[in-house]
Image (cartoon, rainbow, N blue to C red; front, side, top):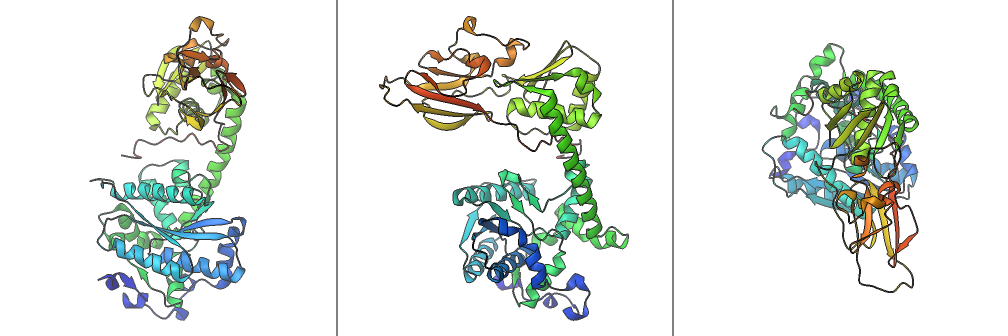
Length: 470
């Protein structure tokens, strides 16, 4: 049964002339080309290969192993394959990948998606589950990056798919050959992104290597398959995968330039209080172009809530319109409160939407509310008093507010979700609600440190058009 899913040669499925009579589009990769494609891996010492068993990922595995042997790469490498449990053959295909990996001396992890499958959006859910499973495995194995077999045709399909969803600059930049912060926090490397799939399959044919065929890739039930089916028609009109990829690459460059300027604007003009809220000049904000205004607003919301936020375009445009019209008052969006007061825009975390949790019996290092890193250690030589230490937001902490030195120039409400430590029913450093405990604070036999998670080096502030995600 499994044998019917494998292809030794494309000639078994269609009448194709011999490779040497075809143009370069149908020729296999040369050793020199493979060496160039994998050259950047010399900067890594431990990587994972994501292999599904399809022709493109099998080519990735074999080309990598040939490069490793030829160039004497001494790093560590393992293979991960995800069994989505969506087809009867999936387990056998995972075993095929494991056997092939072992032939090349690589250990293979079979990761199984055992959760209930959604009735709609199956491919999107499978993609998310795949990255989550791989991220968990790579974290356990301490891999630096994951190699994926996405190729030129995949890049074109991604562009077209996002175009139909009304994506903007961010989405139409499509995939990067080196994605530092990919799904599930993975660093993703795509050495084949400029190579047509036909050349990857030809590389396997040259070696007599078989691969798996997933019938769902041809099913018009799925949007990707429908886009794939019209690729030849688009190419006849001049919209070939290579031209689409060129456009995507140019848009990605433009997006990276925008993000560089955006990050500088944020660092220069947004005041980031260590206890949580942020503020900026409304005059400065109004002076920016619309695209920068929208993205700066999103970044401020993300900063105070500690999570990535992609609002629908109409929602962030409505907020921008409110600011442009110089209207005093408050708005809420994405779990944040925004207050306009005397030409200053204040933003802080909204307590009612998802209040920060109270962590009890703290000991060691950890993360609180996706905004802070803490370290709680018993002080050396301090007697044990049986008291436990807790960390939570100001609004439900055992703090006498009359003792708090509230910061000048900020609304008191902006600090309701500020972090406070306490032992038993007594606070550790009342001023922590306003100015934070940064390091080496000794109370009740504990050494406590608390650090705000730094602003990321890469700032995007992305939004979704009304079509995206619908």
